[in-house]
Length: 192
Length: 192
DNA sequence: CGCGTATGAATGAACG
DNA sequence: CGTTCATTCATACGCG
Image (cartoon, rainbow over all chains, first blue to last red; front, side, top):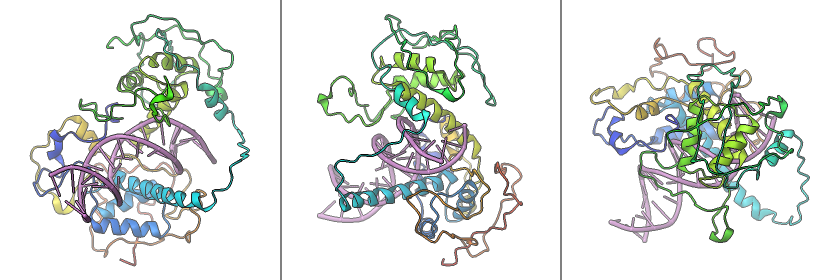
């Protein structure tokens, strides 16, 4: 995943931040200024927890006055702040009422989705090699599909058998019943 | 994605969760190996976005060769990858443009596209409903604060430049309503 | 100077 | 599906 590629900029590219002025602007990750933090904190304290897109953009635009910032930084900031508050809070609450040992939680599995996921587990965790993922034309209502290839990709040095034909794995897009009956296409990852 | 695909990897993903529990490896959640990620990414790149049940099972069966994996992991992976790609693209935001005070240097910028991509904004939340700066109700966790956030919060002494007028990349995408060119909403942090 | 902590960033899992 | 939650990874920073 190119874009998903993440984590960190490789050091080599470190210079690219603000233009490489050597003033210590590191490009690795956003480092909020105290003013930025102050504003964000104040917004948070004012009750804002999950800003919308517009809010995020406005906020980051404003905060850019104090220094380099991107909207994703604002997004992450709120996500993290909220999460950590909850996290800390949770520790406290655990000790608060640590009773319930017999929690008869009526986990209402109220939707197929969950059931579906539930069923889905365990099905294929055994080391079976050999696959033919057939993939015919998946109807794409998605916008661009650069390449609708994936015609013959094989994932491994095929050598094995596999038998997953249980009748109970009818899930996934159960809502759509979008079943592709094994499309006669086996994908082959040649590069592997 | 873990460790960098740039080679130096950091965390050698836990090897064995499935085999035996002896190693005390915490198997809280699936941690894909780089090979698994590579395959999944390749499939995605090949155009696969919403694999069918059968495809999911086949894929996970194959990927199990590289390590523990369940079908639902594959399912979620595609869901997330698809969603995040869209999300990323959807949030083309403004902050990428100038850095007011710091608009110097335009030397050197030859980053690998990787780095370049990083510069782009991404992520944030998108409004499902018409939004106001005011968020109505949200999760169960936060429902204390006076839910009236800043109707009019401005983050600075309003002398800062509002250079939203860059016709170039300024197409903040807002899928729903809520655009009067300038939402009558300008944040004002009175307390600052 | 080497750690422990705070926090930015990423992503698996799940909800509505 | 888009959004949100939870957990983890990576790193900047401060302490001793």
